[in-house]
Length: 104
Image 1 (tube, rainbow, N blue to C red):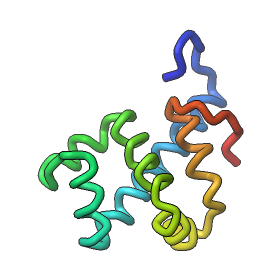
Image 2: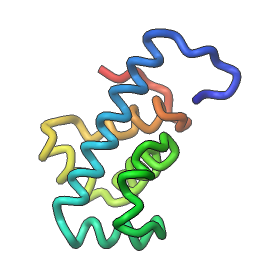
Image 3: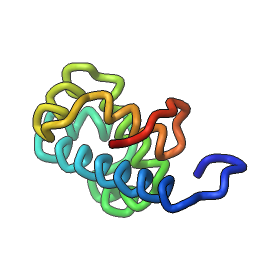
């Protein structure tokens, strides 16, 4: 949650959309063993911990961070989801990142 900001309905809606996008991104990573292996290696968690970790907004932000750090993967995910790759940055912001723009 943003520090010192009282959530309102609009910010909660953005957060929910961002969490859904992060979960979709996690599903996308899990669909390809190569992608999942790289993600697990980067995070240090095991495959058996993913379901539990996915409940944590910080973990979901990490999923989006991972995508944003790999342009080819980011573009492939965006194409798969039929979204603008910039939506990842907006979702990161909604989950507590520093990039402030509105989600569509």
